[in-house]
Length: 328
Image (cartoon, rainbow, N blue to C red):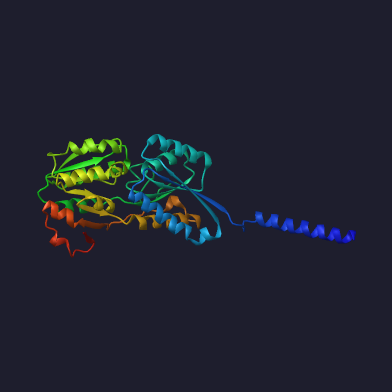
């Protein structure tokens, strides 16, 4: 009887040892921690987040390993951005999906060793996040929503040729906005265009209402660059444009439903998927420091037919153009 008990105990101990060694040999599911950090809650960021999660959670890697995704939202508050960045620097997740340049800057400053994947960065080099567009030189990779400035300016001139003063609302604290506005100034100057920029800087979304009112009578059209602060105030900006019959050009397609005249934008849901692909390629062994920033030179032009009618603008010539969609 005693020998049988000893045999049973030995078998149990052996089984436990096998399990223990198996747990140490790397074959068991690994927990991979991702922090998704959004600067504000706007449609573009929502789509970026959804696209990323769908692609990453549906990947072979996620099916074979335990993936834990924690979401944070700074609600447009820089003090909350700092708090989130401090928390991430302490907890050290495997990857941060940063939705907002201020977020990426804060986290990279505090925790440069954490892999950052940024969705829809405008100019990572100007922001200091990457050393070049061809290779970041850091644990940083990104997809870019940098708009093709020459195409946007030409679009404004083709649709509204009488515009000589173009209003801009943006947050100078956002590197993405500063990069676009700087390129806009340079392009207008280098081409000798008779287009004056009337700039209205804002520090937060609440200031947009006052800023937009000061443009009344001073501009013939308004342009909103890829700016999270301004986009969070898009309902106010669009209402002003509708009420005062001022053509509004934006960079997120969601603005059309609120009354914007034209948007020249990317598919942010697809961009989110691309961000997940970049992250997965690093997990598979690619060096993020040597990966180029992904850009898209052919965003979709969407024209609001109802806004065009209200503004008295003829859009017939654009109805069959490739890359242009007319939205009713």
